Length: 370
Image 1 (cartoon, rainbow, N blue to C red):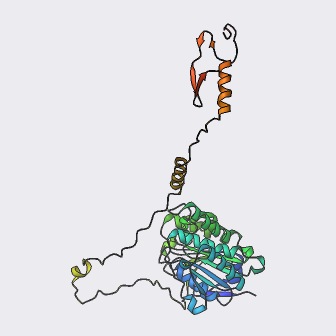
Image 2 (tube, rainbow, N blue to C red):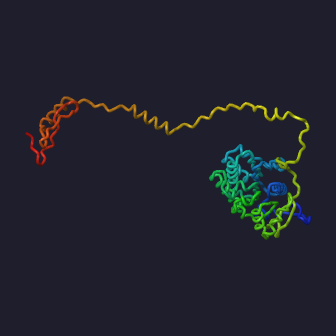
Image 3 (cartoon, rainbow, N blue to C red):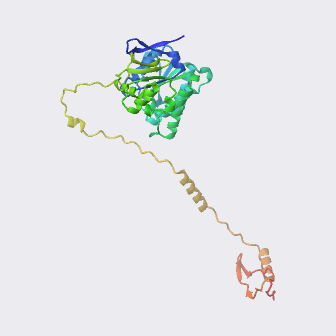
């Protein structure tokens, strides 16, 4: 059965449809500068396909939270869960076929990458018995599959880039259809972008992005200037799920709206305020937080304990010799007394008893004992 969802209208006024089954067998890349209508396009795709296929959205800005109320998606606030918890949540979402929105709003770039990688890993690593068809939409994909290293750690970048590569390169056999959207093609890892077979290219102004978009659509470089002339909500479509030739289309309306709507001009308040008194007023007192104790120096503590143990170790006490031992040593000393090579043997203390040094016997050229 072929399921064609309506994305909008072509420039000629005909309905523009997307073959959902073909999309599940391939992948989709959406590109457009900020304000070109990327999020609106993704919202239209999600709303139209929600009755037909399970979905999950990696949402770094909280733009798709409204889908939870309208279409019953489960909202997962990544800030409230550990990486391990999100991995298990991804596995369970596939097992029970629940559509989800992973809200990454409020996290810094490194934690967004780590938690998104954990959740995508759970979707990917589930048992074969649960490889049901699923749309995986990643907004602002350049954050999770950057072309070059940024300010995040190498470990976080490798985790996130590996998860995105698995989604786009190996996800099809597991029923995962990746749909990635980016503002800048130049900032998106090439091995991730190259796996897409369907393209929706929106307005862009930078030459390097226009050149890459033209290459992906099979257009000549001189035709790339057309991307500057696209209006908000207009895209050039190409791919087996969209059109066999580059096709201009305008995205239709959506039932839900983003929380972060496009700012509009508003008149300034008419009432006159004492701006200096309000803006430059003394700041409120800061909360005195208890100082964080530094971590103990375990190595220093071990060394100190070892030194103390050495200091208190009892010294060996020399035990006094018995009368028989003393008499035996005196007799031995008397028998071997004398000089060696004409040099007299000096006395030395021997366990509290003075006596001559023992003579080991005559040597060549030395005189024997008296």
